[in-house]
Structures are given as structure tokens and as C-alpha cells.
Length: 300
Image (cartoon, rainbow, N blue to C red; front, side, top):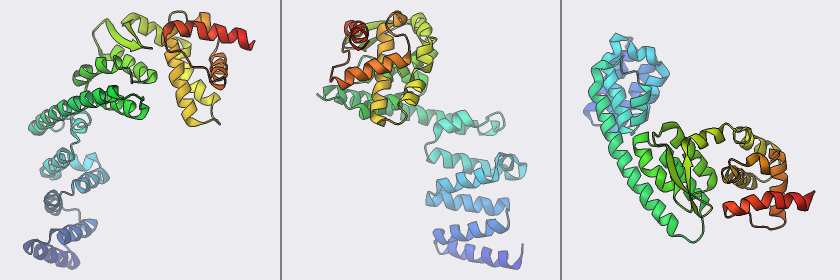
């Protein structure tokens, strides 16, 4: 240790003895730029935990890299890093991103992360149920609030997601485009063969096989991308609305999509005509079957 570093250590000890941890933390960071000693790092981590500077520990480890953390000389530092993630409630990251085969000595931390995540998810599930109930009580639809609930649902692990997903599919105020996301999620993870959804005010049973076939349709695969490309210079909110209408129409028309839509470009043209004419777009499956052929006759 150089004389300058020795002087810094004296200042650090004095700061800690005086209870001035913020100053000690700053001095420790300066010292670590000169000397990456595991003992000094441990003191720095301890001070960071005391000060609730959890992100500083995470940033330090990220900057050093995983190989540094795996070094046998740094093994005593691993619990401090994991604790910083626990304190930031990054439970899912701990469970899914950490290679627990390499850190088999710290299985208790993994179990703690799993238990804490389960408690957190139970709270989120209850909050989504309450927020959805409030949303359904409103007269006007709030798309942003609806999409927020859908995203919170999709961020949960599947065992908790499946508690909320049917409720969102049966809700009147959840947009069609969001329900297509939820249906795709159900198709990927659920073992159920059918699910009931509210579509244009009607109860509709969707079969897993039918959803699979629909999602292989070229319009389903390319629709959103093409609509956004065609609407590149247009209003963003109008584009979002059109994407929602498009997937709503596909579900409503399936399995008769090709009888009513020749191309995505044609669908977009006819739908824009309807909007410009201040026509209400389909509110029921029957009206969807009428709207496109009817518009086709009026505009060609």
C-alpha cells in the first residue's frame, strides 16, 4: 500500500469512528480506484449497505464483471452483492439471471428471493384485481390504465399470471390489442384447451387449436409491422388505435379472414374511410362481418 493510500485508510478509519459514513464511503471509492483490495471492497460494501446505497454495490460488481466476482479471493463479497439485489427487490433477477450452480453455497439467498417474490406477487395480484374492479366501474374507457394492468400481469410469473389473465380477458375495458397479447400468453403457457373472453360485448370461447392456426396467418404475423410502416408519417395515437382495430377484426373474422380482407393495405384503406366518415367501427362480431364488404361496395 502506497503512502497516499495509507493516509486515505487513516482518514477512512477516523470517519467511521466519528460515524461519518458518507465521507468514509467517498474516501473508500477514491481508494478503490487506486487499489482493488478485497478487504477494502468488503468495508466499502458494508458502508454501502448501512447507507442503503444498494445500487453502488451493484454498479461496482457490474463494472468489474462476473469473472471478478467468481474469483476465489472475492468469494466473501458475494453475499454483499446478493443482499444489495434483495434490498432493491430484484428478486426475479436473482432467480433467473444468477447461475446458481456456480453459487451453490448461497442457496439460502435464492430461497429468500423466491419467498420474497411470492409475497410481492400476491400483493400485486390483489392490487390488479382492485384496480381492474375500479376500472370497470368507470363510464369512460381509460386505455392507458388498462394497458398498465395488462403489463403488470405479464410481468408476473405464470403461476400468478394465470390468476389474473382470465379476469382481464373478461373485462369490458381491456382493449382488443391487449387481449390478443393475453391470449398469446395463455396459448404459450396454459394447459387449458379453451378460455372464455369478452369480445365486442359478447362472451366468446377461444380454443387453443384455433388460436394456434390464427397466429400462423400472415396477417397476424405481419399486420402490426405493416400498419406502422404505412402510417409512418401519421399521428401516433391514430396508428395505435388502428393496430387495435386490426387485431380485433382478425379475431372477429376468424376463420373467415380471407373472405373479407384481401390485404392489410386494403383493410387500412377501408378502415380509414370509415373513420373519416365518422362511422362507428364494429362493436359486435356481426357488424364486423358487414362493415368490410359494405365499405368495399361503397369505395370501389
